[in-house]
Image 1 (cartoon, one colour):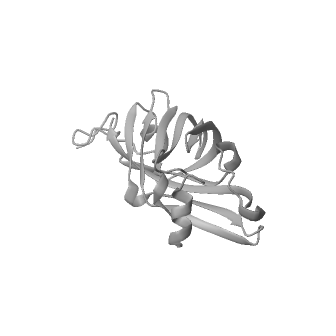
Image 2: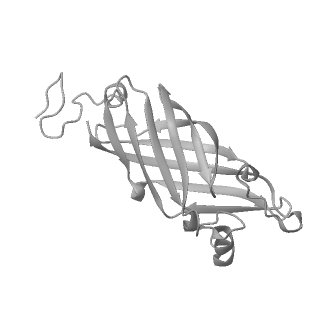
Length: 190
């Protein structure tokens, strides 16, 4: 049973399911890894070939504060990147790149997320191979229901050199890495 002016008796989520009411806060959310993805693409072989890969291990959470501002955390398994080439994937997990043995997670700590309509301005840090750098991007909000929402970020550019990932045999690696995420969050508490 729901009341027009309050939370559902059965679920504790807002009865009004507009994005403004659902995302007004306070509430906590957990990433649904089965409906989420994080992928990257990067140029190699002197910019002639684009390598694409997807992370198989994702975890995260989000908190919407009173007033609607938010914060969260996303963790990607460093050794879970699949580029459909086992030899390359092992090299990417090695000390030349992600150094997964010492740094098993790539972590995005999102200190501030501010929504304007369906756009979300995100500020925080990204930690790769033990190096932490500022992170800033704009995401799009989609599929908002009282129980879940999706946050999509397309074309987030990361310079691997900022994280000490400078291995480059014969100058084969060029350009920046572009990251795309689709993150589905499920409500854990209102």
